Image 1 (cartoon, one colour):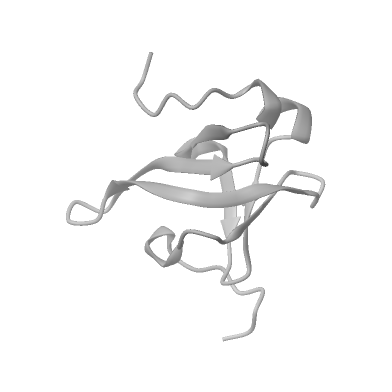
Image 2: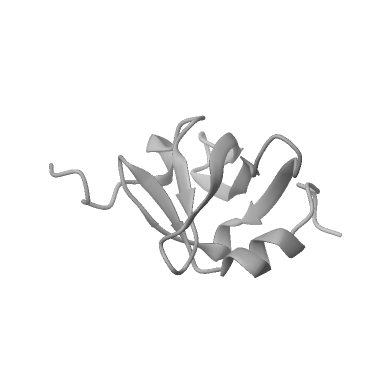
Length: 89
């Protein structure tokens, strides 16, 4: 398997790089939110920097997942608009 090959959400680990729709790094995975037993992926809690805190990215905004990084379908500005709420509002 090469570094850019897509992998399942179960392979996402804390610390994995998160990039936006323009391939700019916007953070790192802090926590994977989902139910492994039911194979339900809810989303990711990402760390966006020392002073910007955490953002929750819903599963539907997660694009390609590789061993190297997680690609979002959001721009960096859209990521900044996310909150750290992991529960549906």
